[in-house]
Length: 257
Ligand code: 13P
Image (tube, rainbow, N blue to C red; front, side, top):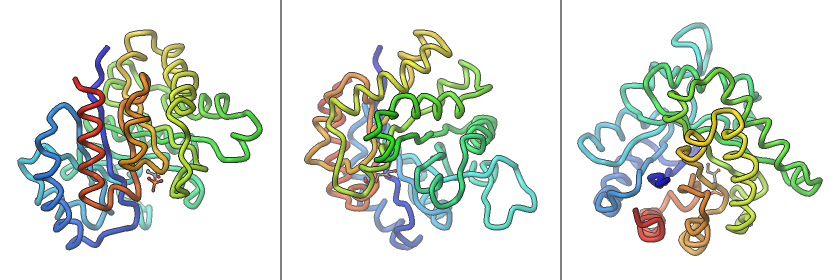
């Protein structure tokens, strides 16, 4: 089963609209040649319109960093999937920073995933355990529960548009990444096998699963060499065009589809 690798840059709360546009103008020509990799940038909501306009006609796609499940309503501060839809192909949900600071629950992640799919978009659903859970040996059980909850009520047909990002919380922004083998083992046991149990072999084998957490050019080859890792969700290294381009080049070369 060949799965097209997907590299997504999650810019978090970095880059103003002006900076984001200047950045994609510099980045796009560097990463456009690698046609065997899906390439995605996720600016702040404020920059989505400007970045989407700057990337019009480009193969580089845009993601929102979140989306509310209701199309509109009295939800101060929120942006709906329907509102983001004209500008994006993907929406990141369930990020551990949202789970930690914004009370993102498994139930919310599930409602958001359904809303995103209903808008014709692709959710990138982030899951991952804390350091304490990891050290207590609870990783597989916990991540399995996050995956099952996020996918509740989603059809096999819709699942084809879902990407799951396994991001161990202890590896995010810490410079401390999981080893390739460690990440592959968890992704296989906690993500792909959960999807296998829920949807069967064809769906599980087609699902794209990213690793995230201190991914950089220096460790990218190790992650991309793993059979169950189909790309990366990247924070810090995605803010530099040379690093972002290096990640795409490595994914293209190592996965070599
Ligand atoms: P870093 O690559 O900065 O560790 O961030 C990972 C992440 O949270 C991507 O969503």
